[in-house]
Amino acid sequence: MASVDRAPAPVPVPARDRPSRQHQQRVVLHVGVPKSGTTFLQASLLRHAEALAQQGVLYPQTEDGIMFRAALDVRGTHKAWGRTRAEVEGAWDDLCRQAWAHPGTTVISHELLAAAGKRQVDSALSMLRGLDVQVVVTARDPARQLTAEWQEGIKHGRRATFAEFQSRIEAALPEDGLARHFHAVQDLPDVLGRWGRHLPAEQVHVVVAPPPGSERRLLWQHFGEAAGLDVAALEPADAGSANRSLGTAEIDLLRRVNVALGGRLPQPRYGALVKHEVAQRVLAAQRSPAPQPPPSVYDQATHLAEQWVKQVERAGYTVHGTLHDLVPRDPGPDAGSAPHPDEVDPADQLTPAAEVIADLLLQLHRAQTELVDQTAKRRDWKRRAKKARRTLAELGS
Image (cartoon, rainbow, N blue to C red; front, side, top):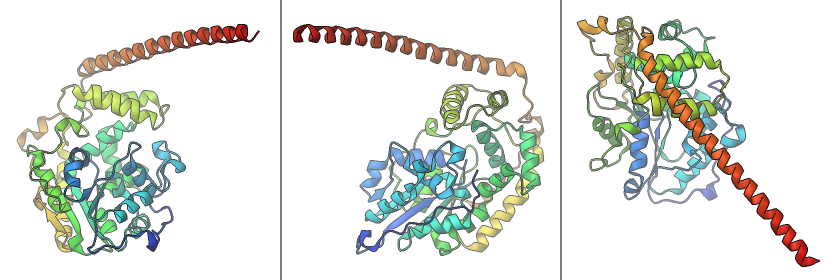
């Protein structure tokens, strides 16, 4: 993975390409953090792109995923995602040019931007200098984020158990890439500081995800408020559009698959086959209990969250939601009875494993059937072509 301080050189938008406006245009930069409801919010924005356009809001989308490519362009991490430099180069510039050409509000949203280093942030924002830039960071309590980030890493091919992951995050050794990445994307004050250090505090927004059990609509409303969007009449995306979490048995099964794969399935094929097909489509449909942060996490997470609250308040950022929802809720006396994320009965994995095998067999059957059909069609085309050539030859003789 590229260093977080490596950035593509900025490509300024020539003055002649910047439309003259009677009023200032706005750009809402939603830069993460990962696992704080970002996929749900992006799905909601996409669902209502036309309705928002009537409000003068542009949410740029392309079939080849310009937001994702633009985030990789800013971060310089295309190789880690199985992309070439040519596939992502200039994507951020393209997004910024769309913002310059749009007379209203442009919303740019991708959680990969959270880990951008200071020089990368400066380079990215230089393309938007002169526009009204509003930075939005969604966040939730660090106890849930630790479990969620561990699970998301498994979905992207990591192999560490939760205990291994937790110990590496707590040690935070500078040479440990996993720990470095976690703190780069999940340290809320640091993310806010990197993206907001050259902006007035009122242009930096913290959207606090509501606690478990709250309506998803609340997060959507808080985000709309931060972005200056009228979403009151816009129903948010349903739960199925989010990056769905897996149960304890399923995520441990996937981790064991990653161990067996041993890195032999690189990105982007891993993402397409394992994350989206196996994890999101097959395993997410299973119903084992969701992994819960073990009791050992709460004391440190609570102390950390309390520090975050003080730092956000001291910085004077604009807060949407209840800032103290960042502090993990007391798990209560039953917390000790919840199994540790690594404590999985192998018998509980039999059903999801069978479902995965059955699904893969069906996919293999469909692929083989399609191959047989295509082979038969090619043979038929060859026969027809041979017959046509013979007919032409006879006519020309």
